[in-house]
Image (cartoon, rainbow over all chains, first blue to last red; front, side, top):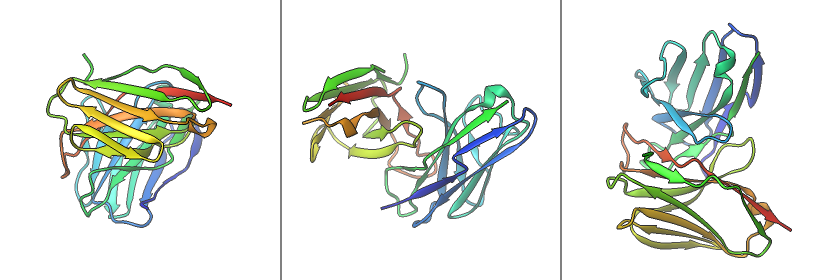
Length: 116
Length: 114
């Protein structure tokens, strides 16, 4: 089955630093990847849609200059949290939709970011 | 009103019980319905995917969609301790394309006690 790998699974950083999270589709090509954020006991909230070879589409209220998304290839999207602050501490999850047009998403295992 | 409402629980049942998980939605444009299972500190994994009203069965799991009342359910028969997880309903109006977007419920935390 389709597998999405996310790295790192956990990261702790100091306030003001930047953190990069990678999302890879291991056995399929993904023209579109999605980045979600999940706070404790809350649902997944879509942050942005990452499109290979073009700019990401951000949801309302998500700062594009703070959450930089790059989708440089059909198997890799990265999310960089710039100048991270404690309120950015959250569980970040990526997902991918196969280029074949499947209507379901495959999720990565998530990355837990803690900003001190 | 949120687009997808789901009782967060927690729900605790004995092993072997039948579990019923439910969501309601408000947008009649939603056509595709999914249930995801999420273990603690992990990403969601797809359990069931349905398109139309009716039932879909897969092993111990049955997904039910009633578009007339905008109500979706997941039933788990013979529940096992390994079923203990958070169950998220999700829906979308789009069949695909660059604007494909899932709307999730808040998730119901289920514990199956041995």
